[in-house]
Image (cartoon, rainbow over all chains, first blue to last red; front, side, top):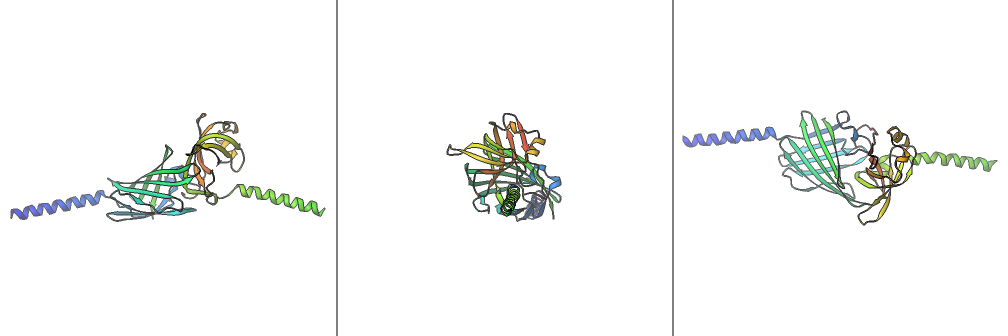
Length: 161
Length: 131
């Protein structure tokens, strides 16, 4: 009888833990469309301070996050991140090498990436950090671009389609 | 008379072609996936519409000085923002922009800062949607 009670207790603890984990673990899956009115003014148009895609298609599993970004007049980007934070190669346009990592930090998803390409400056390296936050049917991405010791941060809001 | 007419026609056609070449689509010339930041001294200025062109001497990783052509907003827009032609000459500038697709030292500026004057200009070009 005592064993049964202990076993039931352990099972209950596991169920409660799993439920709590599921509640705190956000799911970013979906198709997200850029909302210019709710976003920083400096990110629209041809020459944004920090570039964002026009649309994101996100597929999330317990271990992976696939992010496909499309933009007006630009080549699409695609990445499959491991949610344990390990480094992956991001599919980038020709002439660009990009790697990145993604990790869930509480209710947020943090993606860091490093893009490199050759320019008349030499080897050019641009670092990006994105913090994703879900708020109902809105996805907010705060993105920082850092390059040559100089950085800029902008915020974009995407609506679920 | 016929020769004069032909010369006039050629002059008109050339005149029409210049503004078409000057006002091109961003995506035809620049790569939105290649952001760059430049820091250097302004060596020359093309104060014009529809785009002002700022020529900036930048030292690259090999220690060589390379003159970059920076395409910015129109002279009219810069004036509206309180930036004058005289502000540029010999001044240090920080430019954030996007590299030309052909790999030449050419950028389209998102923003620039005139360091000594502490004046900053950010492109406010609006378009339906992000990049």
